[in-house]
Length: 545
Image 1 (tube, rainbow, N blue to C red):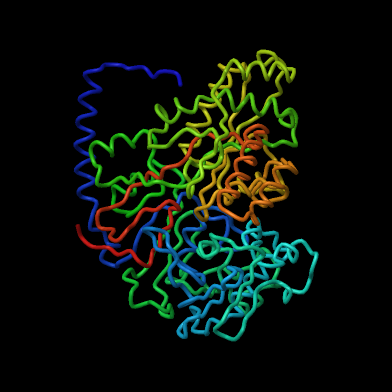
Image 2: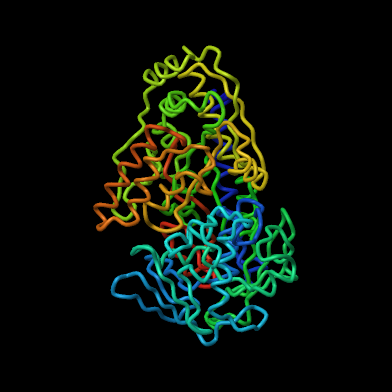
């Protein structure tokens, strides 16, 4: 970035000292808000949610809210991520690891007082696999026997899928192959039950956009219920009196605030209007680390920040162009001097040491090699390279990263790129498989469960989260074979082959692997950081520090 004018160094030093002192006083004074008295947790949530239908959404902001509103068969310990009972009080696994039998709690209920039954889970699973729903997360159920075949229309009778309601309180799932991460999947909203009568009161089972998720209509089964949704302002939830473990829920509610601007979010935090932020502005991380370390968390997070490339548009259909763009980015410099939240530079999609797997492939920073590839593709020194844009969803951090990469591409390749930002919901539509109305777009992937396949399967042909138009049958083959590989070593060897193809073909440009920097007030208790960024809000409570 161009260096800013320094001005009078003595004046700036004095201003810095005064500002630091004042901010410290404000931070001390911000505890003890009215929400503490009401026992309402105030959470910065990044963006206005796309929707609250579990079969429509794909993003992190939506996931946060649904974690409060719904619960699956299996929960997860927020510390070590081990499976714990959820709506199922216990389960059994067959000796061949193919059949899971879940036993529902006697006191499992919906938020309207209706009993929650095994059929409610089957209803949700059938719905997410229906073609008209077009869920980008339907593949999360493909470990279940015949789930893929039902989703793709090869079979039309859901009774042939490996999901059975043995009785009102017993759900049995039969898998295609042993799936070591199967229990982890149930923390994800794609596996949540749905209340059939509510959905069909407002439309057909497979109708995408209906009013069933509005506060006055929605029926859920989690620790909190939706009570207010004021777009671009707040989503309010309150304690669910019918939740099976309501006696353990200490909060009276959780309010989610869509605040895409990190500076605004910080001001709200300082004013006591938030207990937790979604992010910290890049320029503020070092300050909090040095001056108020008790207010900042830098949690490990299993995720990758990358750029998608629209391989269906010229000149990005040429892998030499894609690879040149990737090789012209100095990731180490970005993580050291720009981002500075403990992130690590990424030469591959999958973060290091995901359940013991670390990719061997790597996309290097090699400006000279990048220029050679671009020349080979017909654009020596960037001459005649067509105009294009980097698309990102509105957030200061994404803008700073895009500006940095814009400069690197100009300096290292001689090409000019414009920047375009869109709000979260518009951005999701623009970058969807149905639209793909972009050239290069910011993206990120946070693990839904701790296994490399959760990252790598996203870029198989036709996957709902691919969104690049890229297809490679050899890559697909390795991912498909990994599902039935006899040992973990065999699985990981196939992942290495797949990741090598991804690094060579470059439908995505890896930039860095995440940490999760955010601010949290001292009065928030029982918070446990974890690799998935999973926050079971019903286990938190507020207490004066």
